[in-house]
Length: 290
Image 1 (cartoon, rainbow, N blue to C red):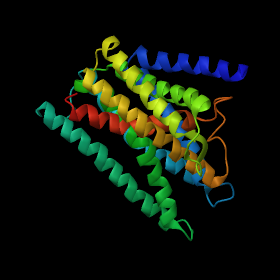
Image 2: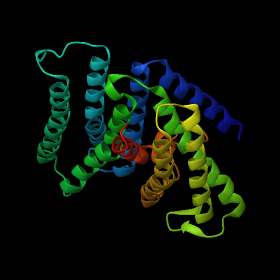
Image 3: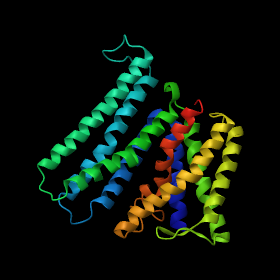
Image 4: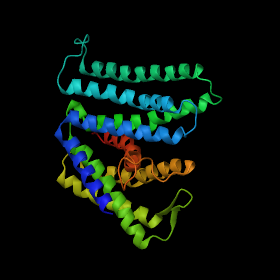
């Protein structure tokens, strides 16, 4: 318990410092988190003893990180007011479209290279291997891109948006645990997570919604409707994210995705809900005018 508390204290300090120092520290923090989570995910997907395991884990990490790094550089350039090299005559909308095209076009080219790599590696299941690579991109890479976009509307970094989302997820998890441990009777998904209950799940949702309502007064980054929508997203999607990661770990018979955080497991264990929530949070904010 002491080790767990110390780890949580250090982790909270790193997160707050990274989020609130500046946009660069924010991007570095979540790029490192993405890299660590990708390494853990590829460790789950490519099991010990599989052919070319280390090399394939590295390829999987690069596949997920490539668009994250590119998007980060673009947002830094926009935020610093640097000229669009070779495209200074473009309008803001055209420049954004151009850079998004580079991000997704470059990612598509990277994916094509994955197919070519498998041509030269003797393996009876190349389709499965390529699927493992792409899972990291969609499970971790794209959610981090969504977070970058959510946190920098109009190229202005708004750290409260990141903090608020993390706080809602933490609230949901805390209420779900407290209420589930005291009142939980009906299993939610016993095959995947024997301890989760419907009572705890609804308690977590209620806690997230209450916290969202409170944040609408404390943090002015969103309208009350947007905050409440985010609370609902966290309550539903965050729980699903936790279940999906549990499913992946259970499929290979492991308890934690990693050991980087003593007493808490790995980065994927800590950010499983967050990764699922980020794209939906970005979508609901955009739909509601944010």
